Length: 124
Image (cartoon, rainbow, N blue to C red):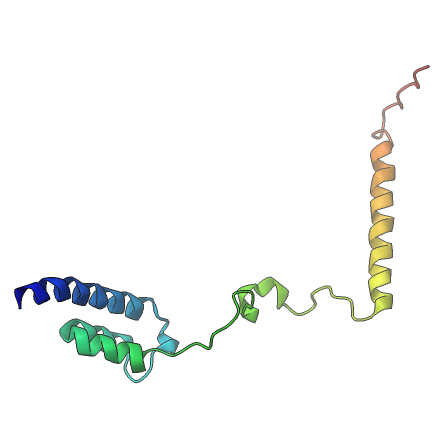
């Protein structure tokens, strides 16, 4: 009997710690049937029964998703209205044409000497 307790004691402690951490880390809107503090008290007072109840009915089960899927709110800069996005092939071409014109203008200005200075003499 003592050997069994030596083996089960650390397992129960690890299970209780795991359940307490998951209760604390779970968002309030994902907790079911009791408030978070209620689940925390239940897990701490009745470690085995409370932990099993928490894992089975206390937390919301998230559907399995691919690791490559993301929620729309994960990158809010992509969700803002008015974000530049081509609706048609013509608008994409117009956007690319304006980008190219701006790049050419920047290259032309970079080659010009600053105002008030003489251009360097060409070396022969």
